[in-house]
Length: 211
Image (cartoon, rainbow, N blue to C red; front, side, top):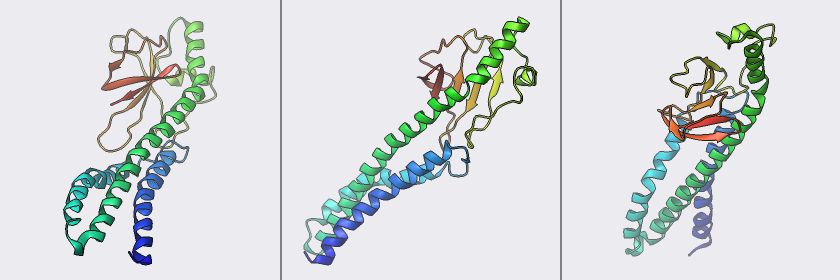
């Protein structure tokens, strides 16, 4: 093998592995940050297409290993496919870690809003009809979530739907494509294991619904 081929054999898998990791983790960090937007929600899906195709490409490249003229190119394609797939799977785990850390922080940032609702309820003998009732007596203004892609709290009052909770805070948190993840706060913290479109994961006193 020539020095050029050796260099290409090293560089190509590294580049193919670096693309999904760099792009996906940065996209996730941006999404849950204060300046995030929903503009890039399909990017992860697009990067997933090569990962889905990589087992087929890998299988086809093995065929090329049996022919002298295509051995090196086939080996390079196989290395690139494996590198991309492994990097994509690692990126998914890393993105999940970034995401859930951000929602733990959001749960902590939401404590003043939760406290204001509870104070209103204690003082008036009922929960507020809307978050607007908290202003200005209990809060100077209705806070945002601090996540640019998921900026607003929803305030819901339906005890029948929400496990007997008289009020609920909810945030729509889609993670890309056709996805209906949610972030929920029940004052009774009596979250079911499944419901509301998915599996619930406790995040402090909140719960994240993985659709």
